[in-house]
Image 1 (spheres, rainbow, N blue to C red):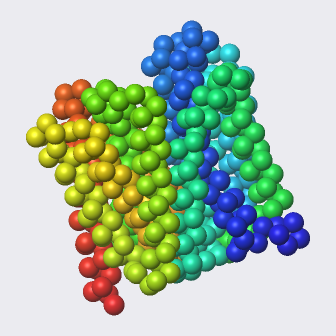
Image 2 (image 1 turned 90 degrees about the horizontal axis):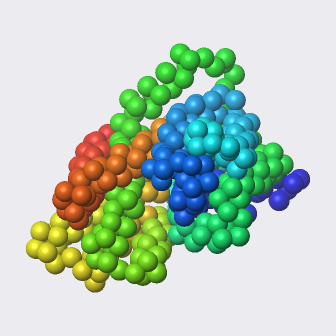
Length: 402
C-alpha cells in the first residue's frame, strides 16, 4: 500500500478485485441451503422463496448496464462505492424482511448493487494493464471468483445452523460494507474521466460503439455462450448426479467442488500460456472446441444409456476446465479494443453473461423432465458449438484486418 491505497501490482489488489467479482456467486450460492427455512419463517412456498434467486439475477442483469458507462463518465471509484452501498442496504433489508415480498424486493436491490463488482473490476484492470498482463489479471479474478461458488454452499449450511437465514443475509451485508470501506479508503481512481457532460444519448452511443466493434461484440457473445454452457451444467448437475445417478449428497458436493476446481485450473493455465505468448484467439478456439466435444460426448453417452459417474464426471470436468481456460481470453478481447469505453464493454460483458446463465439454466429446468441428461447436455452443446462458430468468424476477421 502507498498512502493507504492498494498498489495495482500487489497481491492484495488482485484479491480485492477477485472479491468484487465473487460477490454475486457468494450471494447466490450461500443462500441456497436456506430456501426451505425462509419459506417456513415467512409463510411462503419453497418456489416463492426460490424467486429470491431470480430477483437477484434480474437486478444483476440490469445493474452492469448502468454502472459500466457511468463509470466511464464519472470514474470507477464513486460508482463502485455506490454499488457496494446499494448491495449492503439490500443485505440489511433482506436480513430484516418481515415478509416474502420485502425479501424479494431486497434481493432485487442486492442484485442491482452486486452488478457493480465484476463490471468495474474488469474496467479497472483495463485501465491499469495491457496485453498479456491484463489477461493474467483477468485470469486471477476468474480464479478468485470461481472459488466462491465452491465454498459458498457449505458456508451457507454452517451459518444456517448457527445464525439462521437472516444471519446469512447479514453476513452478505457485512461483506458489502467491508468492500465499500476498502473502496473508499484503498482504491485510487483509474479511469480517465470524460470532460464532456454525460447524457442518455451518450450512453446509447457508447453501447452502440461497443456493439459495432466486431471483436469486442464477438468476445461478449463468446463469453456469454461459455457462461451458458457452464450454468447449464450448474443447473443440471443435481438433476443428473442426485436424481439420475443417485449419488449420495456428500459425493455430489465433492463432484461439484471438483468441477469448480476445474474452472480455477483452466484460468490458471490461461495465465501461464499467455505469459508464453499463446494468442487469446488460439486459446479461445481450443478451449471451446474441447467443450463442444465433451458436451457432444455426454449426448452420445446418454443416447447409448452409458451414463455413469465414471463416464460423466470426466466430461463435466473438461467442460468446466474449458470455461476457465476460455473466460480470461474472451474478457481480454472484449475490453482491449476500446479502452476509453472499458466500463460500457465490461457492463455488457457482465450483463450478457448473467442473462445467458439465466436462460440456459431455465432451459435445462424445462427440458430435463422430458429429455433427461440429453436435455442438459444438448443445451451445453448448442452453447459450445455456437461459441466455436463465433470464435472462428471473429478470429478470421481479425487476421484479415492484419
